[in-house]
Length: 571
Image (cartoon, rainbow, N blue to C red):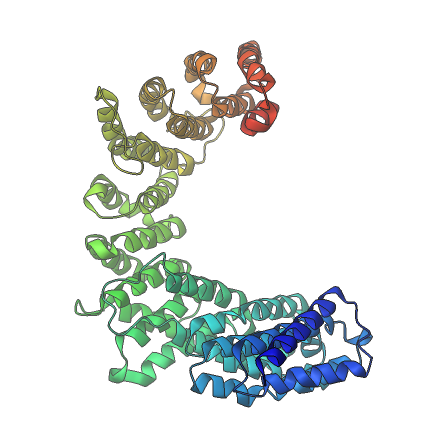
């Protein structure tokens, strides 16, 4: 083929693809068959130039989108359906030659075929256009050595999952079960880390993002085969390999098990106990990535552990050990948070131990997010304890966060590095998490056990507002903290109302932070029904309105200050 012929053919294919996209063709026209034959001739030829191959693939994908409405394209649909099936051998040649660009093009075509005839596959499996060999084509692509090829098919599996879920038909699920099983096994292979990888699985790169998307997909489709069956399938894969199992295959199987762990029925008592026992007895010599993913899996099994309390103490001991190892500390803290949140009733006896961990929190190398999560879990446990123990427990929890914040307030020069211990927002977020999740049950007439702690914390929060009043980020975190403190004790925070409103109004005259307006609306929610508070709240609104209206009346004020608009309207 001459260079001019190649250029012309490429233009023809692109033009044809555009007409398909615009739905401007009479697809029953026999003359169209000539152009389609030309497309398939290019695609079945493994030596076609890449540029022409791409143009032919694009045009074919556009045509396949059109025939999703098979009733109106009864001539074109069978031509495309049968034609695409002829491309399997050429796809295999592209894989053998490691021509990934062509493999990607074929995968796009196979996926578009499946998308177009998905309704037929679900409504009449293995009949006509519902031939499930189409899914075999996709699974061939999922088996490609490059995970980016496999990922092209993901949307089809999501759509299939959605359709089967809506139908809620076990007999239909059984038909598709073998395909989902093969999908999960193939994805498990793709999730294997490099055999020479050292340390824990990395975050933030393309491969970690792919693993995250695999986890999301498996969570979506696993109901078709059942979570327990999937979990068992991965466990048996490990058992079959025995001593021959490499660390990377073990870690990948554990990763897939972690994706479905929360969906397993808590009554499962055959495979999960063996898995938990194996994790709890992992030797110290195990690869760090295996220990990391095993720790994550334990946290995901929190619902199961709640129903099997005999595993609670050994699990806590295991997580505490991991917490003290720098590479495992963050994942251990997250797992511990899951256990605390789910097993909060059984965890009351362990509160003092958790408190010791909280007091030593900053000696562990855990992220701020994990630290906040651990405080959240501990606060949930505290809320379930007897009322006479909550005040002291809450005070101890808050004190650990108040001391470093107090030290920052005493510094004459603030050298704030966001997200570090020199950042007041770090400590404010932690205090906010404590108040937000400490929710004891109080009957009418009882003094709220958190009230003395809120009153103790308030002067520190007030001082923080004063010192950092020009820093909107810190002020927003401070208002959030005050909001959860007020919500925690409700109307029993009345002693704070006057000094809080006075300070908010004073700062708002200088710095129009919209979070003060939002906090004002929270106070109205809590105290608006109290006759003695109504006038004070109206005065607060009046004081806010002047500066707020001046802000909004400025040039493009409504566009530049949308938060002020929202929060003022809410107030």
